[in-house]
Image (cartoon, rainbow, N blue to C red):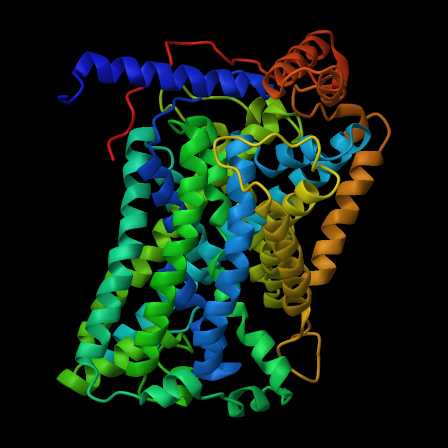
Length: 580
């Protein structure tokens, strides 16, 4: 048989888009976004959001200080195995519920009907705070790396490193936030291409670094050191001597690396063949992070001149180990660090910006979906769709304003700012594992799998995901310096509990609280369960529940108001799939 004709290909696109849209309607939402994201594009936003280059530049020094090479290598292997169980559970849920509401919707569908609105409200607000905090963290990292790059150039030129006031640092931070926002305002075609660039830069940039750095290095560490040396001295300088404690803190490197794994699910309403593309992107993204990250870590360890030198905060790189290794190996080989500075700017530095841009892309989709569900105040504004750019443009600039606001504490207190940023990782791991736990407990009978199903393995993966979250919550809550002071206290658990407490209090407020105003997805969970109890198939039960939810919404129930306003308006939505 020959290749299908252009007419046949277009007919197949129309058919698949129609199936995607029908599936979305059965979940309770009217399709409005253009399905221009191919499976390849969705994979690229996962690769760019997790960003192996960003992860290594941001936290490689953490593993070196707390445990050294042995923890960096074997911790990466162990944590990756645990996170892959999380990824499997996430892939199954994203295939069953392909909507940009993501975890909010998963919780809504998996818990008992009487708890659906409260649980999804809590998950939604925790996700908004975590994702916006993550955006601020990435742009703050970009600002810090900008200062590091300036310092490296100054050292190369023989000049003293310039100093930056808190106001100047905030200005750099704000410039990078705005740059990511502008990149997300250029229309969906350009945005897709930029996310593809981000994904490929992380893949081929990591490959380039793991080849170039060992080739340029004039000396290499022995294999026994790379795979077996456990570093205690650096942690002892921070007051921590217990080897188990040290190793646990070293696991923060691979744990941080997998934040962003959930990015694919938020693009579900713009993805072609979403029930297949979403799980594939999540699983391939996790596998790629494991392989690329491990190879790059091993490469850097073999090429590292001195552990103490590359983590020294008084060095030209300010303690960013990857930047210092690039600086040192080129200086040793060529007599000048210029090659290392240029390579740092071309790959890790650029990778961090594209990571921030991708994070802004999917966080805007989260806020668009949550505005549509009336979780966010002024939900109609957040849930608006711009037909010129074919993106949720209001949500992009709303996230920009929130990110800039979260950066304001850096003007007065670095501790306050770091407390906000620490919330991101702890909250995200709760959100990653929480739905997996619900899937195998209270939601096991009401869950209906999509195209990707774990079958009986769902219980093993869900149990592993739950155990990993419990362990990681403890690790992320540990202080990294002893004795503890106001400056070294780990505020992550307090910010997490505070966020949950505020969200619960807001839900309970009379008249203006979530119980009174939050609509939730237009899906009647009670009608769904009733239909199943009367022998209806999963699809028929979902259709009945979506119809009942829409009827309730139109009648003014659920605390919402015209939730699907604007949905279905405007020009025809059948899209040509972005080329992969």
